[in-house]
Every structure is written in structure tokens, then in C-alpha cells.
Length: 96
Image (cartoon, rainbow, N blue to C red):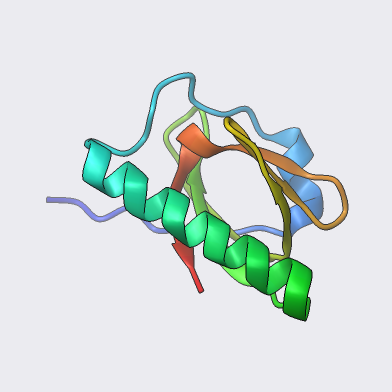
């Protein structure tokens, strides 16, 4: 099995990426954990101005990561400090 290297990007570059239309996680348990971690990261960002590591996948299947403060979590998207938006379906992991 080949392991893909995760590319670090600045949050200001996120506006230039296109994201998958399909869900990147395989099952409901993984999605529930992701949503739980996103909501925890939201509380850390709003309450303590703390950044988290967000790993996501582009439309080309490239894994990327950025360190940012999450300011909002909606049903389909997250908004980062600075206005960048990432669809939740494209997020692989949130490291608190």
C-alpha cells in the first residue's frame, strides 16, 4: 500500500483549491468523530483563539493540511479565521 504525503498549505491558499463532491470518509462512525472534533475545535477557536490542524482532500485526491482557527461550523462547511471555507465532506481529520 502506498502512503500519500500530506502537503502543508497556508490557510490563505485554500480559496484556490477545488474540493471533492463526494464524502472522503467511509462510514458514519468516522463522520461522527469528525463532526465532534470540528465542534470541539470551534469552541477552542472562539473561546481561546486556539488553532487546530485540519487535514483535507482536494478534488485531485491530494491530501493537504493547514493550521487555522475555526470560527464557524455549519451543516456543510467550516469557516476559518480570515474567511477561508472548507466543505466538511472534504475534511479527513481534525487534530486538536
